[in-house]
Image (cartoon, rainbow, N blue to C red):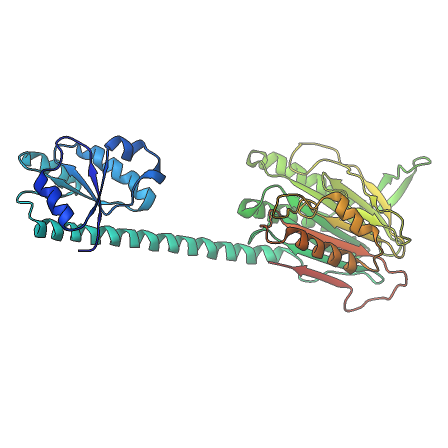
Length: 419
C-alpha cells in the first residue's frame, strides 16, 4: 500500500501496540492531534490526511464536526474507529458512517482496510476539486456573458460631427467594469452629448450599476425638451440666453440622481461623471461635472491646460441636490481630454501612482490631435504600470476640433476597447 497519512486522535484510550505496529508496517505517516486542535486550531497547521483514527470511546458527533471542518481545508479524511473491548460504543460511529477496526490487528488486514479508506478519501478530494473547477468555469462563463452584455452598452460607433474628431480608450481592470463612456446625438441632431463616468468599486456589482446609470442618463437625455433658458453666469455679469441641450443635460443628471437615491441608496453605489453637450457649429460646450476628475481643456495655442470645474456631487449620493451648469469654448486646434481616476491612480510595481503632475507634463508638450493625446497617455500609463496588476478601470476620451474643418471623414471617430 502507498504511504498514507493517518491522524491519530489524542483521546483515551491510546491505540493498542498491535495496531500501531500494523500502521508502521504499512509505512503510514502518523500524526497525533487532539479534538480541540482539529476543531479550533489554525487550518493551515492541520495535516492533509487520508484517515482519522479514533477510539470507539470518543464522542461520535464531536469527531464528525472536526471532520466537517477539515473538509473545508483539504478534503475530509475517512474516520476509522477501533475497539478492543468497548464494542457497544461502535454503534454510534457506524450509524454516523464511520468505518471501524477490531482485533486481531494484523498488518495485512489493517493495511487492506486503510488502503480502501485512502482510496475513498482520494476519490472525495477528486470530486471536490472537480466541483470547484466546474463552479469556477461556470463563474468565468457568467463573467464572459456579463462582459459581452456590458460591451453592448458601449457604443459600437461614435457619431462625429463634421469638423470634429473623437478618440476613446477603454481598458477595464477586470472582465466587467464600472467605468463607461457614451456619445450620442440629442436635440434632433443639433447637439452632441458625451459622457465619461466611473461607478465606485469594480467587478460585477459596479458593472450592474454602470448599465443602470448609463441607461437612465441616455434615455432621459434623448427624450427631454430642446431648449432651456439658463443664466450664463460668466465674468462681467449674468444674462439669460437660450442654451439648446441644457434641458436634456439637467433632466438626465437630476432624474438619474433622484432615482438612485430613492431606490438604491442602501447598496452604497454611486458614480462620478462628466456629461457634456457640444454645439458642433460654434464649439460651445455646456456641461455638468458630478464629482468627477476635472477634464482638461488643451488650448491649440500651446498655453497651459485648463481644468473644468466640478458643478455638483456624484450621482446617487445626495437626494434632491442641485446641479449647476458649466461652460467652455473649444476653438479650432483645441482638445478636451476627459478621463477617469484609473489614469492618475495607475500604480507601478512598487505601488506609486502615475499622478496628476505626470499627466499634466505629458499634456503640456505639443500635441497635434486628440488621438495623439489618448495614445501618449495610454502608452505612459502602461509603461508606468509595467508588470503590476491593473487596479482600476482606465477610460479616456479626447474631443478635438481641428484647425481646418475637414468635414465628415472615415477616421473621425476612433474608440478602442482593451480587454
